[in-house]
Length: 108
Image (tube, rainbow, N blue to C red; front, top):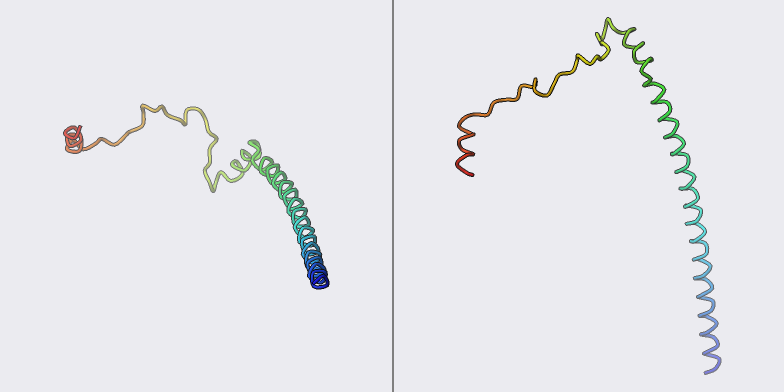
């Protein structure tokens, strides 16, 4: 009986050793994956910063004005001025149908 208990304990210890070995390698693989993902995030943030800088450079007002001047014949773009905008009271809203207004008045 004592030898059976010793053999079963030895198998249990070996089983636990195999399990711990596998867990260690799985943990190492996940840690490697996390490091790779963090490095990818850093690269993507750097790329996003470069793209934002390029966008700001390409959208400089003086550059856009020069492009509009160069392509005026094809595009007909004019610089915006304050008199190009109107007031809210100058907007023509559609007039509602009188029948619809009366129908709504009955429901209230």
